[in-house]
Amino acid sequence: MDEAVLLQFDFDRDAVTGARHTVATCASTQGLEGLRLEGFVLAVNEIMTNAVRHGGGSGRIRLSRTATGLRCVIRDDGAGEPARFNGHSLPPTEATGGRGLWLARHLCDSFDVETGLDGTRVELTMTI
Image (cartoon, rainbow, N blue to C red; front, top):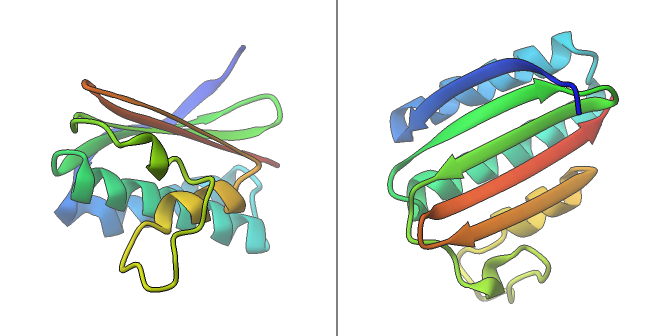
């Protein structure tokens, strides 16, 4: 699978906002636009925020151009998430969190989570 790396960097809490803007600009220059651009950027932001809040305070992002669109992989070094946080189910209305994975899963064309003792890897893709 040929792909060109567009962005790759580490982030922490203080860098999430800047990272979100950088991803938005890059995705836009690659041809993603409108609600699909907004949805992709929101999904990336949710996963970066999860990495900071639940994955050890920082993460790494890699945004690539594929033959059909964009692939974003976000990794963290946290202890991993329980299977119930895979984004398949919407948390109950009284829950104060837990919607980020669900939202990201529904905003992107594909979504994959791998988690374990060495951290979590989330892959988001969006066709252009």
